[in-house]
Length: 212
Image 1 (cartoon, rainbow, N blue to C red):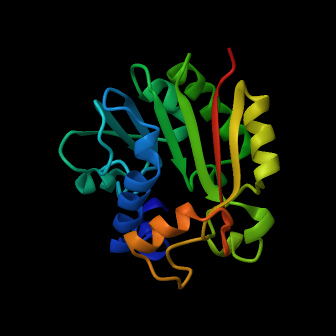
Image 2 (image 1 turned 180 degrees about the vertical axis):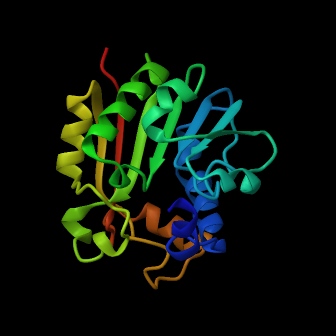
């Protein structure tokens, strides 16, 4: 199932590397310090974690082939995000879940958040990027592995109900997909991220920290 998904729906695409590099350079490098530990859950082809500059970089995915796409110095952890609390060792300062939680049931997501609480406590943060059903309802189930529906309201509430304090919600952060037909370049992504209003924005961003 995992292998065929990558063959059919989630094939290797150089545009992912462009997006990962742009997100690091023009957005997330302001939130991640050189001495931080960064965890990329559901890292896929490693497009984001390969670009990160940090003391420790961890990539987690249940697809074992992802390892061959990682840059030297990135630690690979093969397994489910549901079991992140037992798979990853040590404190994490910044965890990213990009286009991941919609693939989990609510029970699985609750287990994942429980594990993350232990890894991120006391000062680490969780950043979630994923389709926002409020704006992407037409395309949401074009991906046949999407099993849960979330809006920026429902997902923020679920995260808050599971031991986190939500500190930022951006209902429109990015377009739905690199397959949306829009041109993909670092220059355009940088300009888009700087816009106060995001036209065609169908992916949300939620940032949270563990409740003290």
